[in-house]
Image (cartoon, rainbow, N blue to C red; front, top):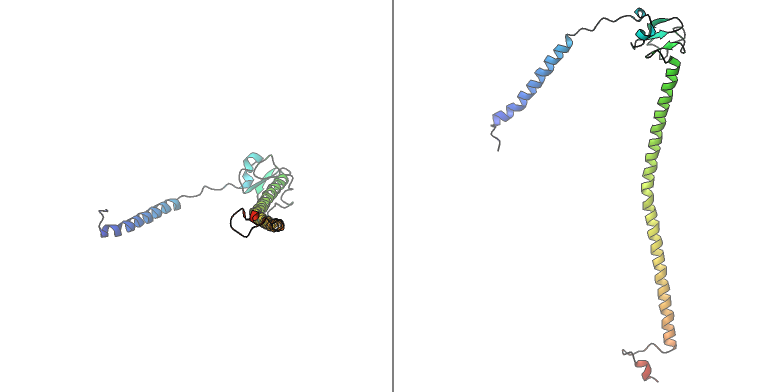
Amino acid sequence: MSNLTPERKARSPSVLFAAVVLFVIFVGQGECQTTPPPTTPCSAYKNCDTCVPHAKCLWCFTTNNCTDYPVSWLLPPASVCQLSQARWGVCWLNFEALIITMAVLGGTILLSIAVCCCCCCCCKKRRSGPDRDEERFARRREEIKQRSEDRKVERQARHDEIRKKYGLVGDSDHPYSKFENE
């Protein structure tokens, strides 16, 4: 059994809660005291390799300068730099090729998701298919069994008629009754 008294049991969650609150307060204060490093303007970078690692900067080979990426536009306008001459992220890939590549990758991902969804829907339909097939086969088996029973009854009736015609069906219980009538 537990050797904690009811008072200790009631205090345990409150002590744990207080410890968590104090931890959050002290960790939160430590984060607030840090200062961000001063930011360097994009125009200070003089070549493509130093410009493009910064997400806020765009290198233009036409003018050979680093400018702030126009965040108000999704794509930089031609007045800033032509797409074929603009570099963002890496120097070896122009912005135009980057856009085409991203569009192809996005389209491939969307197409893959659509195909997966269609396959999932088809698999669900296939799972219900065998149930319908089993029902159909069960009905066929019952129909075949019923026809077999009907044929058996007809055959038995014909055999009984033939037996009556030739006197092979006797009224008495013993098997030699047909010989007594002769």
